[in-house]
Length: 420
Image (cartoon, rainbow, N blue to C red; front, top):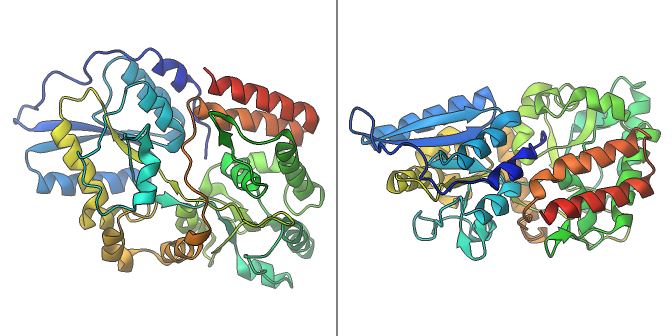
């Protein structure tokens, strides 16, 4: 995922007590207008507009205005509107922003306001802060290892048992794939997503966050960088400079362009990766550290639907959110775009409409449920974490700092962000 703008947290401090939106509840036709903010690609915008049209057809007295932004500008725009007292009625946010927005009294408590009886109750808890339901998960994602089996097998290697494979085994296979292809196809791509480090730390019995601070030891952070350096030094994967050129857009992933055999991406990105490659891709548990009892896998809400605490259109906003998470017609349009639905009834209704890749994701998530770590809501300040981690990681991978110095700097800066 691309960086979240750190300006969000700063702007939120200035939130006004002014009521959001216009004082005029209705448009010229006497309908209630609800503004819905969200981010994403052109494809997501088309799906969302289709879902909005379906909702409006079922609720002729409500108009929903989609307030769409690309990812890079989304939070800056949302924070500016919120601070000005002009927050959208329904807002999309992601897990790193939940504590921040809920803690600033920006979000309405939706307990008893949206029907959540049929939603996965464990996932639903991931929308709660201090016992209040401030957010409704749109769907769930895992962060697995994704593999192009054909590429691995063509290199004379076998995809191992993912319940038992180790990081060393993973790197060894990836290295051999690179060698077999003379560097034209890499064994693996890698990224600096905090989810990767979260999994890695969980294998050592550590949490990314604990008691509103970084819960990982300095050694674990350094060991993660050592892993990335080993991928590079063995040529199991590209150099840091080459990975930087691919960007963080899933469309440009090495897996999507058949330039890699392995890679880690969010599970709801499997369809895009498969479509880009034109080949069959599979999901695996992440490799484990020697002696680890868990792969550290976890489910995470892809994003949330929230409602402004200042909205004057609460009833209409609640109806819209209820439609998005509970109506099979909405599910049939959105499918896995915002993660696989958390409503099992919706999943059952749309299962035949899911792409083959999404079917794989559904099967994979079901297969790992008994192994999952609990969903943890990051504390305030965590919206800055991706930027902080990337700076520290790049300083190591580009040989601008030692792992010791970078780890100390990362923990200091990260904990400072969490105490603002």
